[in-house]
Each structure stands twice: as C-alpha cells, then as structure tokens.
Length: 448
Image (cartoon, rainbow, N blue to C red; front, side, top):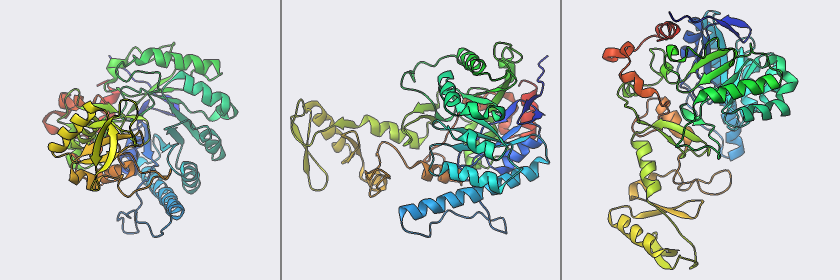
C-alpha cells in the first residue's frame, strides 16, 4: 500500500506535496491558502500579482505616468502591493496550516525590489521564496535578511554548484530545498541549455541523482529536500524515489494539476479546455521573448507563431553572396535582397494573402496577413534595447494578464505541463469533475 510520510519544509513537518508557483495571477492567495490548509506547501505567484480595493474589487494595472522609468516604478509598486495582498489572503485561508511560499522570476524587471517589498510588507506570513528564470544569486541574501527559507529553481547540478559557490554557501542554513524543474516536462518557462537537445529528453532520475551528489559535495544535508517538478502526476509512479537513500529527502511539485480545482483562479473556459487535451497537445517552443524554452497548449495563439516562423526567409539590404534576387516589400516597395528560391517562396506566400513582411532582429522576414501585421506587438513598440520587438514572439505580460483574467483561451498563451493530457483519461476527473484543492491533495497523498 502506498504511504506518504511528512517531511520538514520551511521549518515545519508537512506533506511533501508542493503547489508550483505559476506566474501573473494563476497561483493566487485563494488557491495557495487552500493548498496550505490541506497540509501541503503552497506557492503563490509574486509576478504582477493582483491587488484589490476595500470592496474586494480587482484594481486594474493602469499607468498614470508617461516615461518608461516612471511606469517601471509604478509596475514595481503594483507588484509589491499585489504580492502582499495575496500573501495575506493565503495566510488567512490556510488557518496556520502547511507552509506558504512566494514565487518570483529573477529576470523580471524589479524582481529584487518586489521581493524585498513583499517580504517586508508581509512579515511572518511568507515562509519561503522560490526563484528561477535566470541565476538568482542574491535571493539567498534577501531571504536571509527577512529570516525566510529560499528555494532556487534549477534544471541541472551544474547550475546549483554555480549558485552555491558564488553566493549560497554564505547562507546555507536557510537553504530550504532545491527545485529541480525538468526542462522537457515542466510547463511554463524551462531551463533548457544550449547543450541539451529539446527533441531528446533525458530521464530525470539521473539528473536529480547528480544534483543530490553535488549538494552533498557542497555540504548540504540529505534532509534538505529536492523538489521534483515537471511530469509528476500520480506519486505511485514515483514510489522508487520516495525513501531512496541515493536521492535523499524528496518532495514533489505540481504545476498543472492545481490548475483544475475549484479554487483555481483560471477561467472556466481554460479549465474545460484542459479536460479535452490529448497527448502531444502541449508544445515545447522558443517563441517567448525571454529567450527561454517554454511549454504551452497548442491553441490558435501557438499555431500562428509556428506558422509565421515557417513563413520566414533571410534577407540582405544589398546584394551579397547568394542574395542576388530583388524583392520589393512594404507599401513603398523597398528592395531587399534574397536568394532566388526564397523569392519564389515569398511571392507564393504573398499571393496566398500573407502580404506583409515583418523584419526580425536576425535579418529575416516573416510574412503575415494585413490583420496580423496591424495587430502585431512589434509595430510601433520599441523594446528596452531601442529595437522593435521580434514579430516571431509576443508581449508575454500582456498575453498572460489577458488569459489570467478571462481572455480567449484559443488566442492567448496557455502554459501547461506535458502531462496535461492526463486530465482526459484520469478517472478522478470523469464526467468533467473539478475537485476542491483539499480533494486533490487528499487524492495525491494516496499515490493517485
């Protein structure tokens, strides 16, 4: 019979069931508070978290200043208030049970200021900080300043070693655990390196075993857990990991399954879409403007990005090498130089209605129709580098805010892990059943 024993996480004995922190408003105080109340480790998102007025009404993110620097300041202030609001909600709902963590993305603008502002404004309510999306060297120092545990998110032993040697060895007593996020299986942004093949996933056991070995070399106790994140559905399938002396203490982080609960803040349309997914309906792609690989549902939003990346040719501003064919583009019919073969392709796409050629930072042209060209986020938007945004990508904050607040699930980015297709055939969800968080946690604790 499957048996799941509690372990110590962030200073308290809890079930080793961790709610993954999904960005923007998808892991909020209500869902996370319920998870902690059920005896697990909850994680709310500190990335552009929602805030509410005195009547409980959502406060929209509306800028009141004009300059980029002023608006950046507004965004940071908004993020701090939202994170504090979600921490308070989660704490109240938890009833003092479980543990409550906050998730931040190190590469987001103002990450350090938002983290410090939230920990200062919600003292005693947040027990740990999980942090990924880059190399969060300073998260240990910031966590130690407020006496909370920190949990770096890594995808390799090498990444942890670098973090430990540069910064974490100074604050080893507050290392609460290490989140191993599998780069091939996890939803959202993944830490797939240039040396790893996105088409050839590596089994996680050996990678986690190597991570534990590195942690031991660094003097980290086996009681400090590794959180296995990505591809985890039913713990009975991971029974050989639990109590395995080669791996030390193990907890399991769930990102996708908590989406489908009654307390989950995502829209009903999103929840019902999850129940229809089939194997292969989640794509590992590199369209994100962050530069990281990420995994999302293959909806119309993703399909358009796939299609436009296929309608792409290289060009030069003057004749050189194989670029000897003239191609007039745009309303002014400016000449660019392409290969004869690519010119034939371009003319065929234009004849099919993809008449607008959008330039990318890599000196390629992407062909879209007039409607897509007009609405493309690269038009009339200068990025922080002073260059236009890449038309093969998207405005990540805009699309995640949209889908998180009831936007069209077919035309916005819908993150999900690669196991999401299992909703459709897991008997727990038969007939479209959507459990409460407690029902889900109780189910997971049985190994199912």
